[in-house]
Structure formats: structure tokens, C-alpha cells
Length: 220
Image (cartoon, rainbow, N blue to C red; front, side, top):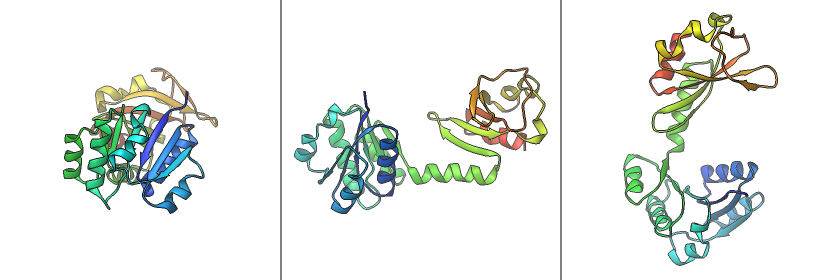
């Protein structure tokens, strides 16, 4: 069954999220007060409605509680609106409410009104891009929870031919290799502690925010 997701606010982030989720097969209902943005998003989402989501009666007509998740993507232009919409979604019994925060104060208020998850796209992108600049062999990274991260790291020439047992990464750096991406197809293999690493291997590594940079510096 398709995931049904409500997206409110079609700025750069909301529009990008709507397209990405639609491409992945989710059924998206997009909302914004700007008819031009609604016309644009309607080309690739299941449905799009031009309306003010802070209007409780109008929002209730969309039955957000029947959807798998609702994402409030309202940006800097109206923090008040994002807070109101988040509160309304929770009051209506929406299963998962994800709200975009623009700063620390905004984030605390969204927590108080009941957002299940809070994201700051600019902040998260800044952190990830900083790591990509500092560590050129870092392919990608993504948060797994409050502190854990998953990183894809190219095997450096210095450790080619060594195996995971020899490298002792959990003891030295506090990270765990959970997979090895290998070959032209990029298939992911279960890591073997005694198999030598190859030049084109990419390690899938899990660790906390302190362990990942420590590991990247340690094998540089």
C-alpha cells in the first residue's frame, strides 16, 4: 500500500521533498497558499490544494489523521503559521507530525506544541557539507537517531589490503562497519573481519557524531 503523506508549504524544501517522495512512490497531497506553486507541484503529486492550512475547518476537511504522516515545511516567512499548523495536526490525531524549524527558539516551541520530529534542513545540510569539505573520502552521511550517524567512506590507499580484524575500528575509533559496497554494481556485502579490503571498496560505517570524524581523521 502506498504511503500517504501530507506536505504543507511549498518553498524550496517542501517542493523538493514532494518531488522526492513522489519519485519514491508515495502518494502526496501538497498544500500551499500560492496558486502558482500549486500548479507547479500538481504536475508530479497525487493531489494539490491551494488553501490556508491554519484554517482549522479547512485543514480538517483533508482528514490528516488518515494519512501516514504530515510534514509542515512552512519556512522563515511565517513561524507563527508553522506553529499553528503543527498544533492543529497534533490535535486532529495525525499519526506522525514532522515540522521544519528555522532556529533554536522555533524548535523549542514546535516541541511544546507536540511535533513528533523536528528538522532544520539548512543546519543538517551545513553539517553534512562541512564534513564533505573536511574529509574528501567521505561519500555521504546521514543521521540514524539522536546521536548515531551512518557514513559511506572510500577505502584509502593506506588501508587497502588490510582487514577489519587488523584495523580494530571499534576499539580505536568507536565505529562499526556494517557493510561494504563493492564492484561496479555497488552491491553491499556483509563485512567479513578477515577479508582484505579492496581499492574501490566503500565502507558503510556507524558511529556517533564524535566517532565518525575521529575515524575519518585516523585513516586519512
